[in-house]
Length: 210
Length: 271
Image (cartoon, rainbow over all chains, first blue to last red; front, side, top):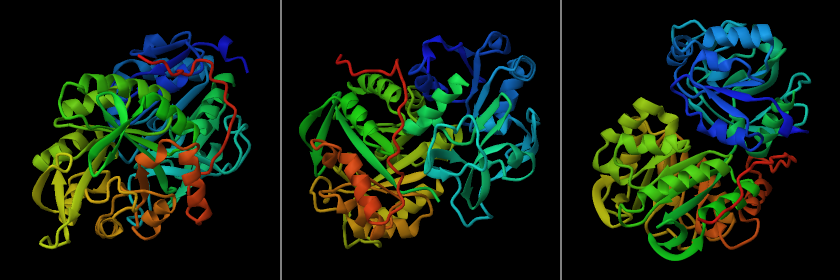
């Protein structure tokens, strides 16, 4: 794998996420990393990473006010740049979230719901959980069961509808939810590959070379 | 359900990792970066770095250390020590910490916990509680703060419940009479707290052999087990602990190995 010749990676900054961990992990692979504080910084990206810890509404408002929404639509949907959404970055792909009232990007139909089963499991879901892959995918091609990743979240994409159609990994916590999805050049994970040691680094390496 | 976590605690005094016994520093181990590099390779699930020097003059250095640690620590990193306000918490988080650990300042001013969770969410806050057996308290344990130097009037279990209500995402429980004594966790204390709160409990203090980790979960009811001293000075320490836990039938993260080409991964450089 020749990461050295890999295209530039742009990390989307929308003002609230702690993006340092993601940048730290990506820096192990390539020096060619830019942080996009506004939408026009996205032009020319070879890969786009949309990280996220925080509130859905604040995140969407940040994306919109900085011009990231139109830039993402151009780069990801029209140009076809591979995108990796992480955690909240997965939530943004949907039409909306029960965490707030703002509309999402709406690239995948369905809504983000609160995780759990009405109180029997602790929320947030924090820790290392095992995921299963319902179908072969590019992102998980190099990983072997048991595949475990670090999760920290209170909301999730239920494993149903279009989310389930594009799920490359699912996980169970109270109920089944989508741990990762893949649709063309759009990739997203609910877990944090940048905090998931070698399995996570393998996944990032794979993303940089798709 | 999430797996039981094995956590390595790094006690950092004047910029170096040290070992402690009964909350007193005993000897210096060395560089925090070397320790993290090894633990990372030995499948630890999480790292907690605590600044324990007696003055304030080492705090800027601690921030540099956190920033460097986060560049080589690809598991969750929690940072604590003398965090008295939300600005200090924010600074550590900006340096790349994933969670902050508060102890004395939370007991002195409980509002601090709410201030941190309002801004960063409860997954960001670990409340560390130290205590010792005291038959005059309702639960049988008294909260002690300031590196075990100052007694409070708080009952330990009641305080654990209050911390969880005020937004602690996790509680880390240590005993001032077990710390560094190699006799295992204070299982009575861990069990009482685990039974009383619904947030994850991290057991800390006193691990002398690998079976103590298993007891912390099986008997103490802890969600995660942490230790400091035992992990230094023997090869594959955290990996062996995970293997012992798995052999006892506990669900733990497996030791998956992948060859990942990371040409730019930071290498140890003394400075």
